[in-house]
Image (tube, rainbow, N blue to C red; front, side, top):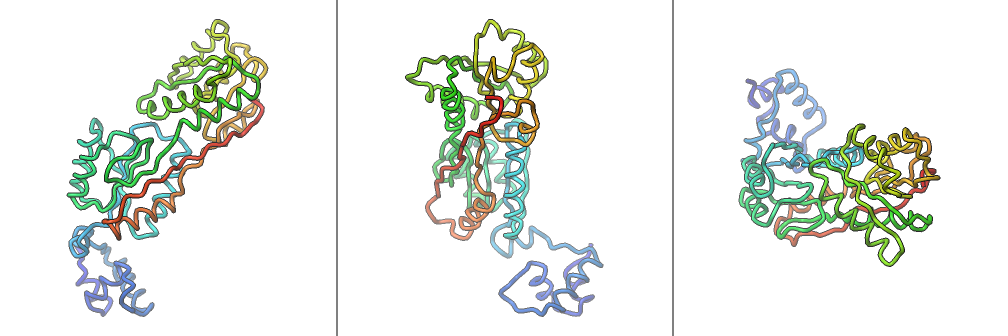
Length: 327
């Protein structure tokens, strides 16, 4: 296994210079030709810095741990994660995605702590104050949660999914629809999103002469076909389908049963996916604004640099209606 001493010998420099160059240290002035010579020597030998040794020298790691979400990740959230990881990389952090079947909440926090990350970004719910304390005792300078509620000791990005349901229902109400169905996905891990969206629909229709019917639905063609076959007995004139993917699934099943959209049933999804614009009729949807990956990366970096600062709490997740043909 090549060492930094081997790189230094081949490049004709000191081991300290190799360390400065490969760790992107800006405090020491090193000429560009020397930097290039060191990098070329490292490539020729196949040398990479030892992360654990670098962490010992710095007193902390540069690893940002991102536990895998317990809910299915769609295109919208995937794009957010890609932007976040790229922004953290530009700030010289190493992003590690962690998946552990069966571990949740504070129990999962103990497993995360074993890796000694400098920061942990926790999607969804389940982590409590005890888990935050475990992570901080293990050296995590920043714990950031992304969910509907804040956790003591952690920075919080609060997501109000009730606003998504409220936005969809207010639109349907304005369009004169009064018998509104709300798709409640039966997939695991989605309750933290579907229940607030359902509550948002109920809040938007409070005081109106309107009814709300829950529509449990698995994400399968068969389940959608079975629901569509019962449509005449449901007597609904509108549906908020939780998101665009469930809306597409239900739209096709309803059309197969001869239900006309939007004449018989107005349909609204959420996420504003490109595929929704390609449907016929084009899908009305709730456009969701997730937090900027760059802003979140900067929050992590500030918290790592100043771990004693008061945790920040931000409300994120904007919602706005995009009306198209389906409603």
